[in-house]
Length: 489
Image 1 (cartoon, rainbow, N blue to C red):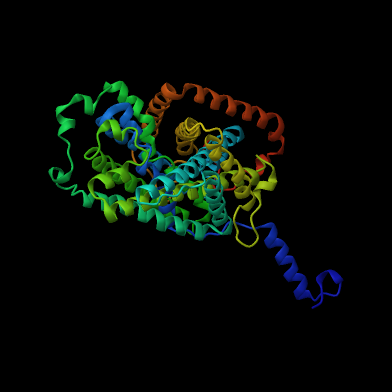
Image 2: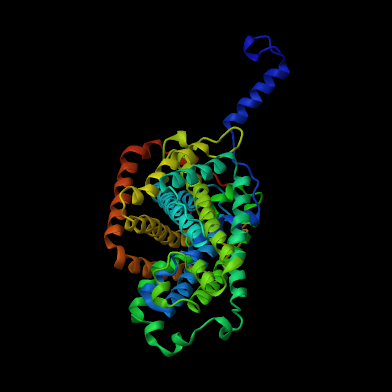
């Protein structure tokens, strides 16, 4: 075949070569996702919190303290889901809240929000990989296997396999997430049925909660406040659905439907989880258990149900790590595409249409934080890694409050088509601000040094951006939405 470069190419070959070159220059992420994938992404990241982590709120506030934390923090995340559903169904681009900050507030805020997102999901991914290596060995021993798991090898292998899935394509990645998340969610319902939850006197026992103040609120209302930090585990990460907006076939439909059904699923799962665990395990044990749902299944059901909960525990952890890779890489990729970071990170794979460089770059970062507690033989470092994720999320929720007010001010109802319009504005934004401040204070009580360290990190990163990176930001090219001129401009 005659080469175009040889100078003797036909007009058809010249046009074909030009089209191929243009396609390479204008590669875009594939629009292949529907509402079910968004549900699987949002719930998949979070559901691991129902299987473990939430129960540390029992240690802080007792059984009722944990339930109050689940409800109050559930209100916070319902506000998050409603606000995200409205704004993201309009700002349908990868980067989610980062892209919103870029359009609504400005570069410095956008840069920080992008870092909040990347750190939140990368730290959560690292914690998931660390925990799943421990869980696999523990659960296998419970089920009769006497061998051991090499934690280093398991952590590295788990992260690399999940990164490979993300590298190969978002449709395959989130389809797998949808399946394993659904299995993990169904397992919680099966446990409720197996314990005859509709008839509390059959197998569950709540008499101690009614008759003894020590079980219900052992540390009073201050303990309830301290429990808020771990109440976040029921819902932490649902806001990650925004990262997939650019890859939805219809973001105006998929994001609100997937996000709102996701938060409803998590609210139901939170209540069922607390109910079966509180009715089975003593609060002193439940407050320190590593696998509370699995332990509940062993005590009350055993056999096939315990095996299903073991599978659900591992699946929930893998789904969380998988979703975190997806979300962190989209935020990092978006920042590279806009020159907030080196443009090299903004590349899209010509075949798989994924942000492959962002995915690959974050792999060693996640591995390093995942193996650090094992390498130094300091399990308590895992709590610090998780707290980095929680605090970054709280800072991002704080940004969502002024962002929502500004969005409604610049583009009022009726000016832009919204796939979803959340009701009762500004009440959800004000509620989000109040509860986020309470949770931030509760986290400060236990991890004040970690919070200070994180604030210093973001301050130094902001200085770096202003001094070294801002000059590369092309302000005129940031506003990618085909919107009318903002009100007042």
